[in-house]
Length: 262
Image (cartoon, rainbow, N blue to C red; front, side):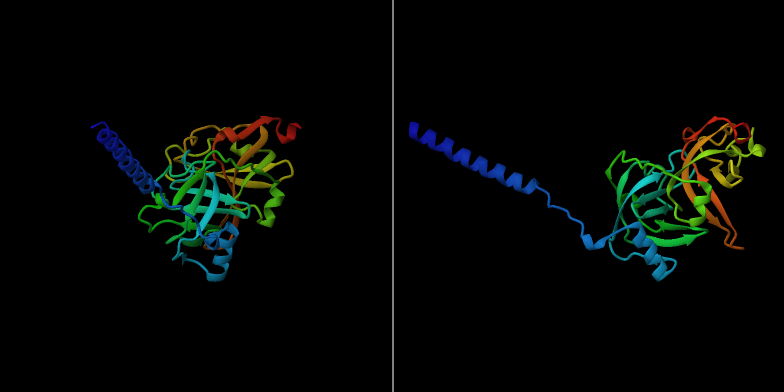
């Protein structure tokens, strides 16, 4: 009887270990890898547009790895984002919902069924016809914040900084703008405010009436400002306007003396 009891225990342990082993094998997911031949850079996407023209549609799952430089979390843009990698910047447009991305998100973007479109001076990746673009923009790492590039208004003439996060220093809002707000809290569009440097150059700060800071009064001093550099090209006459989209007024630090007081 004693021998039979020991035998039963041994058999039970063997069966149990086999069961656990099967369970462990079953629970181990397959390793997912990305085909390196299908990884694109922002520069590659610009080249595809140059070669193929507007409304090019990706029919395969090409991947873009990039960092979110500006999201729509403060309402200055809506259902869109600006992302960049080491080769350039590009706009993600017509996302499913606001708040899909956050500044500092390093994301993998599946480009299948995404459309490349050039509109009024900027290149866009349009997600309009996707079932759920949230499944195609996957966060790899968070809080990978991009350091803005320090430039001057003269540097904008090269077009090398379009759709990139930049910082201007020793700038201010024009005298005619003082006392105004960034936008019109009762408006239904966006407003333009003139930013100038001490050399007589200027550009437009463009802010949405729906932004969280629309009713904030413009600062009156001189200092630094961070935002996304864009170029608006009028589709009717081709006129160009250099613009800056700020992410938050906290990145507008105008605590110095104005140009005529320096």
